[in-house]
Length: 69
Image (cartoon, rainbow, N blue to C red; front, side, top):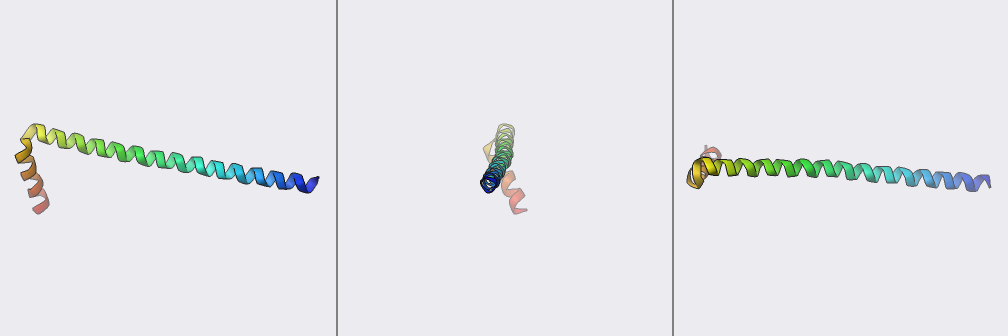
């Protein structure tokens, strides 16, 4: 009986550890995806702002000047 109890306890501990690791990985991935979405949203907002202020022609010209030097 002692050997069975030890084996069951070890199996439960390993399963619990794997579950905790899986949840931690999911939380980490969620944080990364959230920050990526916020960065993309910020970039789209900045692009819309530039288009509203300067129009498409000046926005493209400014972009080309910043890339080309």
